[in-house]
Amino acid sequence: MNIIRATIHAVRFPLREPFIISYATYPDMPAVIVKLETDTGLTGYGEAVPDEHVTGEYFLSAFEVLKEILIPAVLGENPFNIEKIHGKMDEAIWGNPAAKAAIDIACYDLMGKATGQPVYNLLGGRAHEKLEYPRVLSIESPEIMAEKAVKAVKDGYSSLKLKVGKGEPMEDVARIKAVRKAVGPEFPIRVDVNQGWKTPGIAAAAIRELEGENLNWIEQPIRMGDIRGLADVRRKVAVPVMADETLHGMEELHEIVRLEAADVLNIKLMKTGGIFPAIHVAKAAEAAGLQCQVGSMVESSVASAAGYHVVMSRSNIKSSELSGPLLFSEEIGNLEYQLPEVLLTDKPGLGIDVDEARLEKLTVKKDTVSSN
Image (tube, rainbow, N blue to C red; front, top):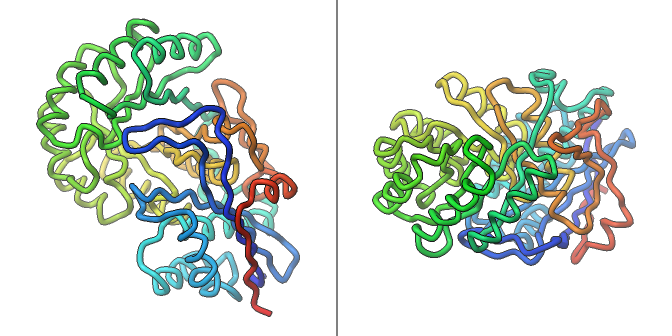
């Protein structure tokens, strides 16, 4: 079985409401969907959701990198040779992890379909009985966030994730405290600053104001790349600290472990370059005694399903936040969410169906690359 053709779609997924985080407001979510075809007639789907603030990629640049560099590098390859495929992609171009993730995910979809197995069975089998996801709240006023949090609890969510980091840190403290007061002292709350508190001193001061709020963790309070600063924050506060944007792959993981910079790690397929390297990071984190989660870049059912297969297969991945499909008013897949769980099927590959007509409708740019 060899890859003979790829169709690339640059799409914009419409959001039900704007998604607001510390460094950007998204009216819709741009992504690149890749369909790989083989000489055996199988097709596999992958997805790239680049973020210029995190991976250094723009979705139209990812489209061109896939078209001109990455797909030509893997045409003719057997998708089962995933280490070789990653080697060829890395030789062809440095970085570009989200674009590489699209090919990686499509290869795993093909592997699962060729063997009649769900992807998680190719990674280690079922390590969890169920997979839960939080209600993610964008940055708004304390009153609105508290109101939405109460509704989420009534709807049946089992945890909340609060986006903060825009404006003054004490405004964020007010948002978090308002939500905590609204939902009670025990309901699980995660806080994601998305680098918004900038420096270790500012971050530590804000977190100390929250030490009585019973938070699961504070995620990426300072700018990405400052691992020493993250370690400084962790030493000064009692709330667990999660590394997200700072962690891309093994190099950053080694430094985080060396400096004892985080309590929890947020693995994202768009940062690691797909399923194969994400599993490596999770295994190395386990050896270092660190728990992980698989986080979201607001992907569709394609990459969200891929992330959930990774979660399912690893016992040290304790949480997940892949709720992107729920934020879209129109989507291309059928990953099933049943509060508070996502339901992975045992169908081969990613286990989802892609609606080609809807994909065409949402496409803003398209091209095909083949070995013919």
